[in-house]
Image 1 (tube, rainbow, N blue to C red):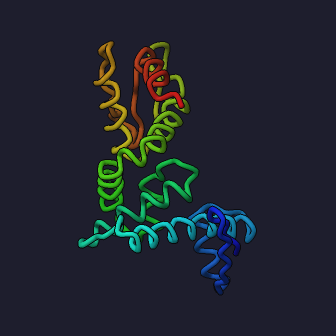
Image 2 (tube, rainbow, N blue to C red; image 1 turned 180 degrees about the vertical axis):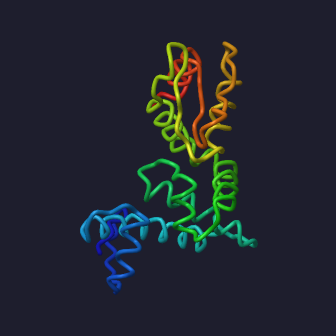
Image 3 (cartoon, rainbow, N blue to C red; image 1 turned 90 degrees about the vertical axis):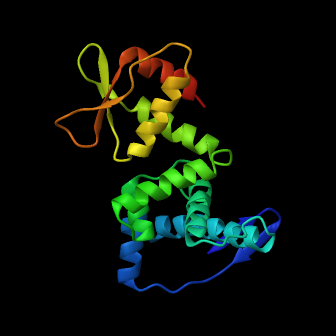
Length: 192
């Protein structure tokens, strides 16, 4: 594995069993070893940044949650293409419950809101952009992370034109409805 870091080239080797590789391919949705190697290169960049922050004193943490939040922030920046992973993805990586993952995502987005501003915006834009029509007046958003819906509703509340908040569809878990005008304004507000 080769990592290009500024003007530094860091090379490392790791040994994984086939079951370990299979588990990692599942976590990161990699089709083959080549895709997994590329993904692990991204993860290693996040890990190196985490260590550098510690060495330089910008990541001097005292609580276990501080480490996890920083680690997730580095993974968002270096591994997930600048988007916030879903609760289920965080649960797979951190071996946590959905509730624990939800709390970790919320805390990370809050604590690192300036650092992750582009990533959060890109995540929310993609979520709204992928909404599908639900009748003539609304769109359906599929989302397993209520923290994202909270962020979208905060964005709606900050807009000049008032809109009804995004609301859950009563009979469908992880499904929400947004009226068309609110969706259009969110897309404008979140546009990269």
